[in-house]
Length: 514
Ligand code: ATP
Image (tube, rainbow, N blue to C red; front, side, top):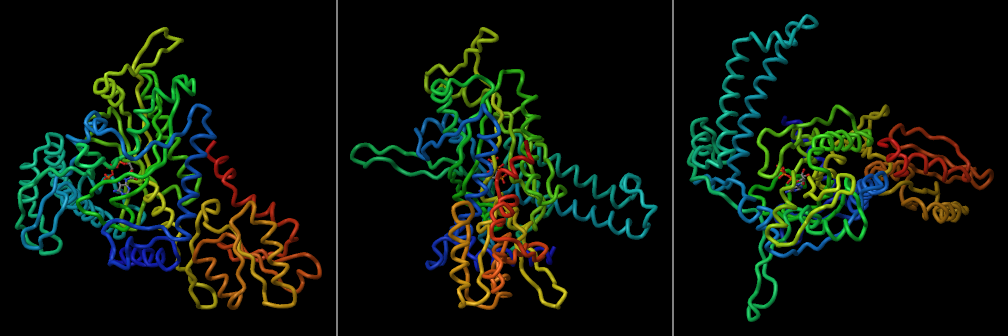
C-alpha cells in the first residue's frame, strides 16, 4: 500500500510538472478540491470528451446532444429530491477538529477487514502452492471465517442504518467498531449530522427580491427539463437518448485523492428514454456497452469491474458502477442507473406541464422510463493518467518516465524534431509540421539533444516522434520513433500521414466498440 501511495504521489507531481493538472489558485496557496487543467491536461480532457461524445452521438442514430445552462429554476432541485435528500452524513472528531463522512469511515473499516481476509488467503496460497483450493480455504479456515462473520455483521448494520437514514445507528456503529480518527487516533466523535452538498448563490439584487439558486450538482436535470423540447423539435421516437457534457458542483465534505473527488468537476451524462417495462433490457444493454467503451482504450480489461448497488437511490430500480483500479483501489468512475419515470413524473407534478410521450405503435401515452449513464470526466482523466504512467528501466541502466496514453487521447500526436539546428533541417521539419498540423496536434522542437527531446515527449505521452536528419534531405525519408516500443523505422515523408492516422484517429477507437 505504501508503495502504491508513493506511485500516486509521483503521478500527481508528474501531472503538475508536465502541464496536465495544477492546483487551483496556487499562488494564493490553493483552493481545496479545485483544480485547473494545464496546456497538456486540457487537450487530454478534450480528447476524452470527444471520444465520449462521438461514441454517443455518432454511433447511435437515436442519441442527440444538448448544452443546458448551469443555473436552473430552483424548483427543479425540489422536484428532483436534491433539496431534501442530496445529503451526506458528516461526523467531526473533537480532538483533531477534522470532519469526515460517517459512511466513508465505515466503508474504509470494512475495506480493512477485507484486506485482512485477502492477506490470510495470500499467505495460504503461498504456503500450499499449486494445490491451493481458495474456495475450500475460505469455507473452512477458522481465522477467515471469523473475519468474514465480523465483516458481514458490520456490513448489515451499515446498510440498515443507511437505508433508514438512521444517523444515530451510524454513530453507534463507529463507536462499537472502535473506529478512530486517522489524524488524532481518538474516538472522541460528535453526533452524525446530515449535510446538503449543493452550493447556493443568489440571482438578482436584494432590492428586487433575490432568488436563491443552486449550482447544479449533476447535469442530468438539464436533460430532463428539456425532454419535451428535444423530443418535439427533433421528432424523436422512443427509444432515444439525450447526451450532455458539463460542469457540476458538490460541496464534498471530505475532498481527497487529487481530482478523484472535487468540488467543481465535469460530467458526461446520457439519459435514454424507453418504454415502461423495457427498462431492464436497456439497462443491460447500456451496462455492457459502456464497459466496451472503456475497454476499447486498451488500458487492460482486468482493471475494470462492475459494482452492483445494494442500496438503491430513491429514484432507481437498478444501478451499477463501473469501477477502475486506481493506485488507491478499485473506485467508481461511472454509474449506470435505471431511474424509472421518477424524474419526468416529478417535473410533471412540480411544473404542472404534461410530460408524456404518445407511442404510435401502442397507440397510448405514457411517461417514459429512463436509463442513465453518468461518468465523471475528471475521474476518467485520472484513470487514464494512472494506468498510463510508468517509470521504465532501460537496458542502459537509465530510467524513463513515460505515459502510455491511448494514442487517440494523447495531447500531442507527433513531434517533429530536426536532428541539428542547421543545414536546412529545421526548414524541412517545419514543412512536415505544416503538412501534418491540419489533422494532428503536432509539435516542433529543436532544443536539446535528441535523446532529451524523446524523453520530454515520452513524459507527455506523444505516440510518435519524427526525426529529420541529413539523409532526409537526400532521399525524403525520416525516422519514425514509436513511444511504447521505442522502435525506430525509416519511413517516407509522404507516408507519414497515413501511418500516424492509422494509430491516432478517434475513428479507430470507435470502430473497436461498434
Ligand atoms: P461517489 O459515491 O464517489 O460520491 P456518486 O455515486 O455520488 O459518487 P454520481 O452521482 O453517480 O456519483 O455521479 C456520476 C459520476 O460523476 C461518478 O461516477 C463520478 O465519476 C463523477 N463524480 C461524482 N462526484 C464527483 C466529484 N466530487 N468529483 C469528481 N467526479 C465526481
